[in-house]
Image (cartoon, rainbow, N blue to C red; front, side, top):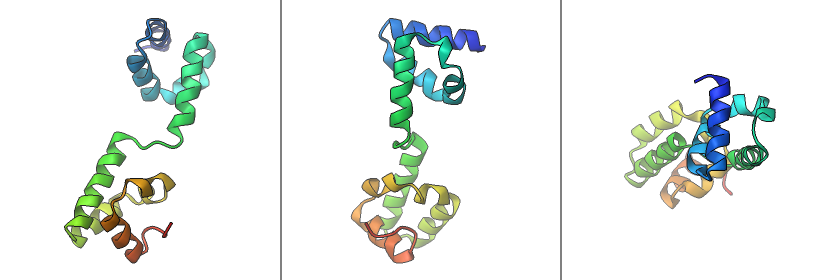
Length: 119
């Protein structure tokens, strides 16, 4: 999809109040849209601003699945699987918002391992 088509589609979806598809397009092309917001309608620019503010503190689907896996391994006390998952996803442990998605077993195990700090 070319840039012109992308901005036309976003503007069209916002005008039709089809915010689900507009949000999906914006999130998939966030870097492009941030740099060229002047091609968007006023309402679309507002949606981009809202998504940029919300995007700073949210986790994507892949990260949520990783946290679910960590919770499962911690609940089953499968330290081998937990260590491999943590080793492959060290950048996720740095994020502050993951703490609320961890169950009590995962919090205790990860704090004991020193992977996260106690909050």
